[in-house]
Length: 311
Image (cartoon, rainbow, N blue to C red; front, side):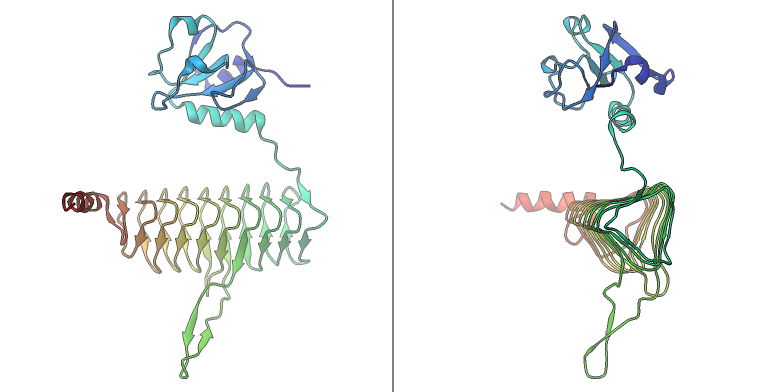
């Protein structure tokens, strides 16, 4: 049986931080859909920055901001829930009513080392291996992951399929004959609470100390985080990015897709690294850098402007 959710289910979470416009009589929703694919039982969201024609959606409940001005004919049939941040409100609705997480437990095909400490209220997916490591309460590790020894994973962490946590980093020195000798990696990986790590991402163990992913950091798919890195709390590292060894990403930082950060650098708190940038210098707090090599955004834009003038 399909569950019906009402306007009260939305507004009860919003306290007094909303306004209802239009027709509120017997409005309910049973599903979430993109705005143009919605049916009469969908709930959708839009803000004034999106180029969306709300007259073309069949949804009867629309989450929007105060700059969206529906015409009278829409107000006669639809209900508009006006909030400051429609996307945030919408994602919370989806999270609460439409996300089904796997039940806690260990899949029969997973392998847990006898010396591992896996909380009973966690989920270990199919064909995943957990070494002599710690997995905290509420954590979900999907299938085909490999968690090496000396990995400590906190509470409510989500690790998606194919991730490898705790492999050796790429650390070598040439000997007298010019041959490579491997630097021992005897450190581990510390993943704090509420972190999410995407599919096929690799996080290397530290050499002597730990590689650290601070609380609530979000690591996308296909990211490489080298040995001894520290990824700051509430920061984001997006798909195909490469963080070189011993580099520190500051709290609330943003590393855009396909960016590369050289070894031993620091990007400051709330700093942003642009799409495909190659970072060779430290980035101060709050600055945005772009380009190859990366430089402050204002300098990058100025150079691009001059290059266009040469054509």
